[in-house]
Length: 506
Image 1: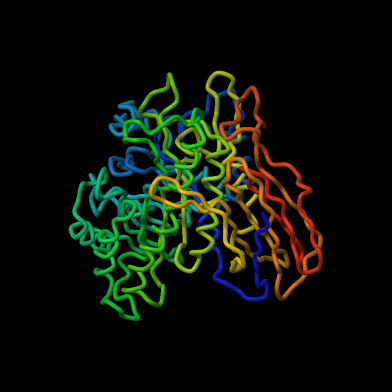
Image 2: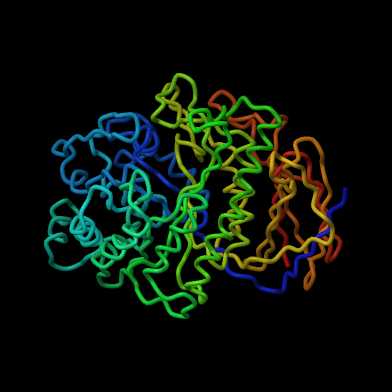
């Protein structure tokens, strides 16, 4: 089968915000302790307790931002417990995730040190569920205010005289659930109240993100937008918050308690997963439609600050730690998401995969026994796609019908594609979701010609293949020669269950 596509390489689309390649680190399982943070007494190479091979791996992704401390944990976290001498920090119980004791050795200063090592912007989720307006307001002051003030003096007493730049602030998390079990109307008022007292200091201009909807709860998004302006108004009337979030996980099991195995699944379960992942297009379009009604000039951003696969926890692990393996299937879930993100670049300003290390659809797995670090198939999708960050999106049109297959009540399109241009180079990402059949794609590059072509492919023998400390490169990218170029025509042979990126000079 030959699929014919057209990319007008000289017609600019919206810029793809690099922050849609963001990450998420919650105090959950072994994401922080044993993942990012090994402690100052560890024999694993570290800086101030922060594991350096993890830092180096994430720097290779050009990681743009890191969300912390949660998640559900954020709304029971009190930031003052995580500052000052470590031996004086109070212990708390992590009631959301495993009921384990949290010693607060990784707190505000450690997180900011991590972000500096990563070269990533911090995205801090404040505590609305069990906290106070004053608590969040003082955290903003502690981090970002220069000069002489109570919180600036406290920061200096803890070893940091100069403030940090911290733009991104979440006004709570999942207020409809673990963040307070609020109604949409009640939370919308709380978002305005908290946002009012989170202030700009000096040159640090806050970008405040209201805790948004679960999946397709469009009424929640509308309740938030009603607080900012009138229906159809060209100007947002409040700066209490600048964006609204939404969360969506790819969950495919018959019940929440039975989500299915991360590594043991058949082809039918694979297709069900891919159809659920593709639903993100409908959800982003739905929330965008609500935002467009109240904010047609697109001044309010949409933030998907939790996304990814969620399967049953791995055997013999703490069920509250949400540890799961990561297969080629997860990589294709990620590649499909990114194509959708690129198509919604006019409204989607940030996205954060859940989560970065050792939790859910992780980039990195660390083995507590061998101390090895493993890069997952999903990690490789992020790396292969990093050229899309801050690039100009290019529209992809298809001249032939795309292959598809029925999956339950849905129809899954089995070829996905997106493109962008940056610094004189074209980057095309292509996914073939068909488990068994290859396709050929012929792309007409209108308005330009391609040269200096380089391609990578990510695939494996089986959909269930994954990387382990004993076999860390079972699913890893390799140079790919299934791409040819003839002037303005790019031809790509796309094998079954494969992700391919093609970079070319224009």
